[in-house]
Amino acid sequence: MDARKEAAKRAERWCIVGGGMLGLGLAHKLAGPGREITVLEASDRFGGLADAWQVGPVTWDRHYHVTLMSDLHMRRLLDDIGLGGEMNWRTANTDFYENGRFHPLNNAIDFLRFPPLGLIDKARLAFTILYASWLKNGVALEGVPVRSWLEKLSGRRTYERIWKPLLRAKLGENHKIVSASFIWSVINRFYSARRAGIAKEMFGYVTGGYERIVATLVDSLGQRGVACRHGQPVLGIARCKDGVAVRTPSGKQTFDRVVVTAPGSHAARMCSGLTQAERDRLAALRYQGVVCASVVLKKPLRGRYLTYVADETIPFTGVIEMTAVVDPETFGGLSLVYLPHYLPADHPMFDEDEEAIRARSIDRLKAMYPHIEDDDVVAFRVSRARTVMAVQQLNYSKAVPPMETSVPGLHIVNSAQIINGNLNVDEMIGLAGRAVEALLAAAPETDAHPTGKLRGQPANENRAAIPA
Image (cartoon, rainbow, N blue to C red; front, top):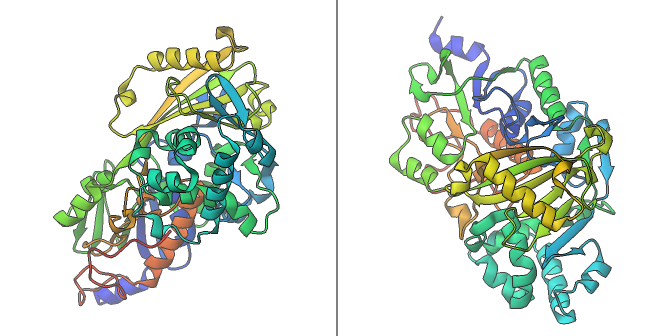
């Protein structure tokens, strides 16, 4: 039989490189008749930044995660895999810490009482938030530095006392180079509840945390015929006669379509055949990382889910008391706290000794919460991730690499393509949906069209990524 007719009869072979929530989300959206899908994950577990680990007697998410009621992409996924009914919804409170004092920031009355700002400052702050929530799209703000935009709307004092600590809590030193579209995306995520008709935003978690979510998702994929393989680092990807060859320590497999979900520089290293312009574009992406300590305590702190830290002498940029949302009985009556420090990917703290991080972190935690003593610390463990999210610098969308590459059948879909968004699991699942729509709408090229471009797409290396 003619080779082309034989190929047309068999299922289209897809490989997804990366078993984080994006890769698993892509597999979930792609799984169906006529497609044979394999997910390859380098580590020994699936989930990526949403995986779980053990800290002393507690097993929970390695990094802090909650689902908002307005996180519709994530909620639909949970419904699809049968976990939608397992959500536990809670209201959560927020603190702001500066000069040794905690200030609640939960409602209009708290803002009116907020000591660091005067009445005019508070009015301008409220106007800034409302104005940002009215804007439909943040693309127009990409060319505006976040500091100049916020100072113009809120004033310099409000920027220094409020906005700068909030930006630092999420971006570390990279807050100096992002565009105003970043803070627009943050504000819009929390206002999206109102636009979705939700009376009050609430925080939720699935019983069992992301360990259960990931395990259920992988099991669901398996039942739908998707092969999910962990412990399979990809050593190289190259075009071959019969498709795209993917090489792992277990050998080489050939696929019709390969989707790489690794960060820019990682993708460039594993994919041979890319043009120099494509490699340069991937390498130019600047990533934000995080050093995040998980602390198990005998006592609660203040019962606030999130505390913004506006004190640069504190070696973490926020305090997340997960037990303010998750039932403490989940942790055997103990309290689970995260102490994140967001840093540029090349920061020396990524190589620092864990005991040094522990000593510094616990010392300052006790200074913030004097009722905590050394004996209250049950366990401490540090997670380090250098490439958490791409930093959305000025005119970011023009620099984002497209999903298609010059190699026929090879695509790169990663978190850098979330434009004007605030990286979270809901954004990743949303990106997976948009990517699958684009990839399926454009059939792969045949030998008669050897350019490597998707049909219906202009052959222009500078086209923007799909809007987030």
